[in-house]
Length: 408
Length: 219
Image (tube, rainbow over all chains, first blue to last red; front, top):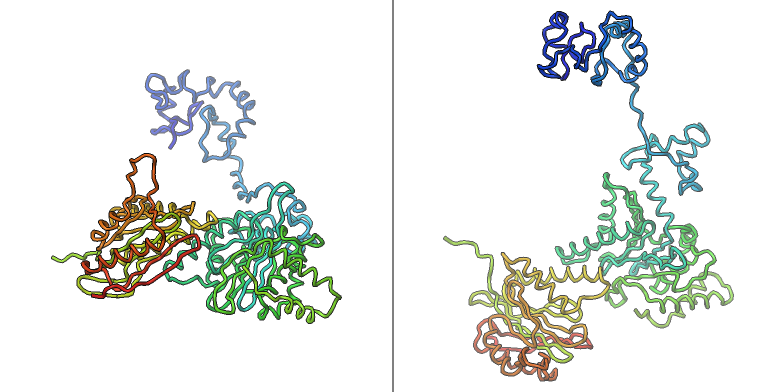
């Protein structure tokens, strides 16, 4: 709605037209100006919409010409409302009508956040793992920024069909310190490498008890992991309240995976190894930030986990029949692989176990205390110092040396 | 015009006695409704934490729900604080849980017994909406009016107004306290129709929890 009423016939027209046409205005220099009220006449000296000079004056043109460039910058299009100090010139208008209408404004560019140089991103060294960048790097150099266009929002797909935010979340898991899980048919073991953030600090807790029959080990953003552990604890409590039975581990993993499917939230940057015991035996699941989960006989996540995975791949086939002590030993050996040279001590690692003993009683999920871990590490080292033998005979040796049942 | 009555009294009596380093919690095992017996073997005692035992009489539906509620809350406490709940903490939690339903109460008359953080026996007695008090002994349920006078006579703690302050716990030994409880139940069984069948006695002391069953009159 045009605030200003005026007449195109007059010099110093306001933005709109006063009803009644221009003739009325042309007759008298003013009528009542709705803007200024009846005291001031439209076209009179106080009217801001009127230029002091009449249109026929030679000075008039010159003044407009002087002011033209700055005014043109303000005046974007015929449909825009003009600022109050912009008196309309009939000559300017005629000039404008002669020129072709301005082209439509260019489509709004999708503005992304300030783009970081991909080389400085945390996955800089591991760029090769993402196919799209490999293609782009080999191809158009200018489109190195191409991938970043689709990675701002978790709800944006890339043309290759990837959700980069989810993949970045999975990279976060690879940054966390190592975690290892393995299971037999009756017991499941979780172990984590304790890496303090600095010499002065303590290490982050990575293994959490979720219920009497289940626990998780996490790698990645520990804060996200704590939130998820709290969620899992609640789920287990609610299930046992309603059903008077422990939540089966496959359903626990499912609940966790469903939690990753929140499109309005950033993905949880933590991978969880969920281990537990239910009616069907011991189970180990790995839940990743993407929402995928798989069951494993043995698995390792976090930094330098490939070394542990290689170790486990060689040995996992016999795990179903392993005793709990053997499982713990293998878990510790796997963690040792990830430490890469550093000495394994009970301060470096956390081990937890859950299972069903031979007599049918349940061993609830709990951490094994440090002195017991140290004993096991010492016995492992003693066995290594023995003359090297075939792996199978070494295992037999270990089995016979486990005289006492595990005391927890 | 008949209106649905959400409550029902399933009868029974609960007793707890606190000693210097033990606590005895006892309840009969009869479940009744009206003049009928529903079960002769129904436990009214629930172990909430390793040093904390709850005995409740009243409406069994509400009692079951209350016990489950408390067990879930205790598990949450364990996860958050990395230790089991102490008896005084559970006492406050029970009071809050009961008052939460102030305007549709749990029809449960509770007695909470256990050891406090120092290892001394403690007994907490409740009404239906959570008003509670730490005492040396208590009885709740249909036979409580028959038992309390006898317990008062045998165990009455000195008045809290007396100086110097004296412990409310009984100086009796554990076996003497158990015998007293058995006698008191035997007396109540004679006259209260809702009390009888069998007596479940739980003794909590530093070495853990010990359970015992005594036969009572079945009429």
